[in-house]
Length: 180
Image (cartoon, rainbow, N blue to C red; front, side, top):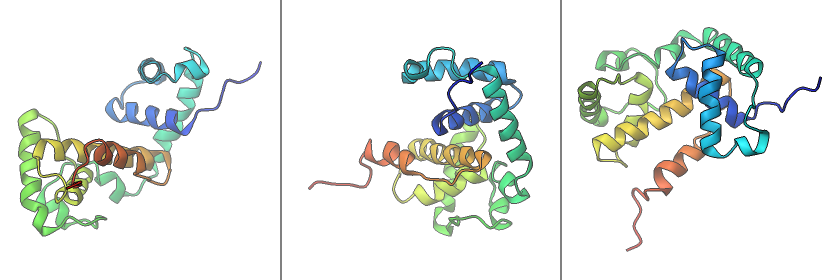
Protein backbone atom coordinates (compact mmCIF):
# COMPACT_ATOMS: atom_id res chain seq x y z
CA UNK A 1 0.00 0.00 0.00
CA UNK A 2 1.37 3.43 -0.95
CA UNK A 3 2.23 5.91 1.75
CA UNK A 4 0.48 9.28 1.90
CA UNK A 5 2.16 12.56 1.14
CA UNK A 6 5.13 13.47 3.31
CA UNK A 7 4.55 16.08 5.95
CA UNK A 8 5.43 19.54 4.76
CA UNK A 9 7.53 21.91 6.86
CA UNK A 10 4.40 24.00 7.45
CA UNK A 11 2.47 21.00 8.77
CA UNK A 12 5.36 19.91 10.98
CA UNK A 13 5.41 23.42 12.48
CA UNK A 14 1.64 23.26 13.06
CA UNK A 15 2.03 19.92 14.85
CA UNK A 16 4.81 21.39 17.00
CA UNK A 17 2.67 24.45 17.77
CA UNK A 18 -0.31 22.33 18.84
CA UNK A 19 2.02 20.17 20.92
CA UNK A 20 3.43 23.23 22.74
CA UNK A 21 -0.07 24.06 24.03
CA UNK A 22 -1.05 20.46 24.73
CA UNK A 23 2.02 18.47 25.77
CA UNK A 24 -0.13 15.79 27.38
CA UNK A 25 -2.14 15.07 24.20
CA UNK A 26 -1.52 12.00 22.11
CA UNK A 27 -1.33 11.78 18.34
CA UNK A 28 -5.07 11.29 17.83
CA UNK A 29 -6.10 14.47 19.66
CA UNK A 30 -3.30 16.49 18.07
CA UNK A 31 -4.33 15.22 14.64
CA UNK A 32 -7.95 16.26 15.27
CA UNK A 33 -6.82 19.80 16.10
CA UNK A 34 -4.41 19.76 13.15
CA UNK A 35 -7.16 18.73 10.73
CA UNK A 36 -9.28 21.65 11.96
CA UNK A 37 -6.40 24.07 11.38
CA UNK A 38 -5.62 22.64 7.95
CA UNK A 39 -9.27 22.99 6.96
CA UNK A 40 -9.44 26.59 8.19
CA UNK A 41 -6.28 27.36 6.18
CA UNK A 42 -7.59 25.60 3.05
CA UNK A 43 -4.69 23.15 3.03
CA UNK A 44 -7.05 20.19 3.27
CA UNK A 45 -8.01 20.86 -0.37
CA UNK A 46 -4.46 20.00 -1.46
CA UNK A 47 -4.09 16.68 0.35
CA UNK A 48 -7.61 15.64 1.32
CA UNK A 49 -9.59 15.96 4.56
CA UNK A 50 -7.99 12.91 6.23
CA UNK A 51 -4.36 13.89 5.69
CA UNK A 52 -2.09 13.40 7.52
CA UNK A 53 -2.68 10.02 9.09
CA UNK A 54 -2.54 9.37 12.82
CA UNK A 55 0.65 7.37 12.32
CA UNK A 56 2.32 10.30 10.48
CA UNK A 57 1.41 12.65 13.33
CA UNK A 58 2.58 10.07 15.86
CA UNK A 59 5.94 9.74 14.10
CA UNK A 60 6.34 13.52 14.07
CA UNK A 61 5.41 13.74 17.77
CA UNK A 62 8.04 11.13 18.62
CA UNK A 63 10.64 13.21 16.78
CA UNK A 64 9.49 16.39 18.54
CA UNK A 65 9.64 14.76 21.97
CA UNK A 66 13.05 13.28 21.26
CA UNK A 67 14.35 16.64 20.04
CA UNK A 68 12.94 18.32 23.15
CA UNK A 69 14.61 15.79 25.42
CA UNK A 70 17.95 16.33 23.69
CA UNK A 71 17.98 20.13 24.00
CA UNK A 72 20.56 21.80 26.19
CA UNK A 73 19.44 22.97 29.64
CA UNK A 74 19.92 26.58 28.48
CA UNK A 75 17.46 26.15 25.61
CA UNK A 76 14.96 24.34 27.83
CA UNK A 77 15.15 27.17 30.38
CA UNK A 78 14.02 29.73 27.79
CA UNK A 79 10.49 28.42 28.38
CA UNK A 80 10.65 29.11 32.13
CA UNK A 81 9.00 32.18 33.64
CA UNK A 82 10.93 35.43 33.24
CA UNK A 83 12.30 37.38 36.18
CA UNK A 84 15.07 39.90 36.48
CA UNK A 85 17.18 37.26 38.23
CA UNK A 86 16.58 34.76 35.44
CA UNK A 87 17.83 37.32 32.94
CA UNK A 88 21.08 37.95 34.77
CA UNK A 89 21.92 34.26 35.02
CA UNK A 90 21.64 33.37 31.33
CA UNK A 91 23.30 34.17 28.09
CA UNK A 92 20.41 35.30 25.93
CA UNK A 93 20.70 36.36 22.32
CA UNK A 94 19.64 39.00 21.55
CA UNK A 95 20.42 40.23 25.04
CA UNK A 96 17.81 41.88 27.20
CA UNK A 97 18.81 45.51 27.33
CA UNK A 98 18.75 47.46 30.60
CA UNK A 99 16.55 50.08 28.90
CA UNK A 100 13.86 47.49 28.19
CA UNK A 101 13.60 46.16 31.75
CA UNK A 102 10.85 48.62 32.84
CA UNK A 103 8.85 47.60 29.76
CA UNK A 104 9.36 43.91 30.57
CA UNK A 105 7.92 44.47 34.03
CA UNK A 106 4.88 46.11 32.42
CA UNK A 107 4.44 43.11 30.13
CA UNK A 108 4.86 40.80 33.13
CA UNK A 109 2.17 42.74 35.02
CA UNK A 110 -0.13 42.59 31.99
CA UNK A 111 0.42 38.83 31.70
CA UNK A 112 -0.10 38.25 35.43
CA UNK A 113 -3.44 40.08 35.24
CA UNK A 114 -4.58 37.76 32.46
CA UNK A 115 -3.22 34.63 34.17
CA UNK A 116 -0.62 33.95 31.50
CA UNK A 117 3.02 33.18 32.17
CA UNK A 118 5.71 35.38 30.64
CA UNK A 119 8.68 33.27 29.59
CA UNK A 120 12.35 34.13 29.28
CA UNK A 121 12.06 33.50 25.53
CA UNK A 122 9.15 35.97 25.30
CA UNK A 123 11.06 38.52 27.39
CA UNK A 124 13.97 38.26 24.97
CA UNK A 125 11.65 39.09 22.09
CA UNK A 126 9.77 41.79 24.00
CA UNK A 127 13.10 43.45 24.79
CA UNK A 128 14.10 43.43 21.12
CA UNK A 129 10.70 44.67 19.94
CA UNK A 130 10.04 47.26 22.67
CA UNK A 131 11.55 50.22 20.76
CA UNK A 132 9.24 49.44 17.84
CA UNK A 133 5.99 48.53 19.63
CA UNK A 134 5.08 50.92 22.47
CA UNK A 135 1.67 49.40 23.34
CA UNK A 136 2.11 46.77 26.08
CA UNK A 137 -0.71 44.49 24.94
CA UNK A 138 0.51 44.54 21.35
CA UNK A 139 4.12 44.06 22.46
CA UNK A 140 3.09 41.06 24.55
CA UNK A 141 1.21 39.49 21.62
CA UNK A 142 4.00 40.11 19.12
CA UNK A 143 6.71 38.81 21.47
CA UNK A 144 4.64 35.64 21.88
CA UNK A 145 4.39 35.23 18.11
CA UNK A 146 8.17 35.39 17.74
CA UNK A 147 8.79 33.19 20.78
CA UNK A 148 6.39 30.48 19.56
CA UNK A 149 7.87 30.50 16.07
CA UNK A 150 11.36 30.20 17.54
CA UNK A 151 10.31 27.43 19.96
CA UNK A 152 8.66 25.47 17.13
CA UNK A 153 11.86 25.64 15.10
CA UNK A 154 13.88 24.62 18.16
CA UNK A 155 11.87 21.44 18.76
CA UNK A 156 11.95 20.59 15.06
CA UNK A 157 15.71 21.24 14.78
CA UNK A 158 15.04 23.78 12.04
CA UNK A 159 16.94 27.03 11.64
CA UNK A 160 14.82 29.93 12.82
CA UNK A 161 13.75 32.24 10.03
CA UNK A 162 11.47 35.03 11.23
CA UNK A 163 10.44 36.22 7.76
CA UNK A 164 6.81 35.07 8.05
CA UNK A 165 6.42 36.49 11.55
CA UNK A 166 8.08 39.73 10.44
CA UNK A 167 5.49 40.03 7.67
CA UNK A 168 2.61 39.39 10.09
CA UNK A 169 3.90 41.82 12.71
CA UNK A 170 5.35 44.66 10.70
CA UNK A 171 3.97 44.60 7.20
CA UNK A 172 0.37 44.12 8.34
CA UNK A 173 0.51 47.00 10.81
CA UNK A 174 3.25 49.11 9.20
CA UNK A 175 4.75 49.76 12.64
CA UNK A 176 7.51 52.34 12.58
CA UNK A 177 6.90 53.38 9.01
CA UNK A 178 5.59 56.62 7.64
CA UNK A 179 4.83 57.84 4.15
CA UNK A 180 4.83 61.51 5.17
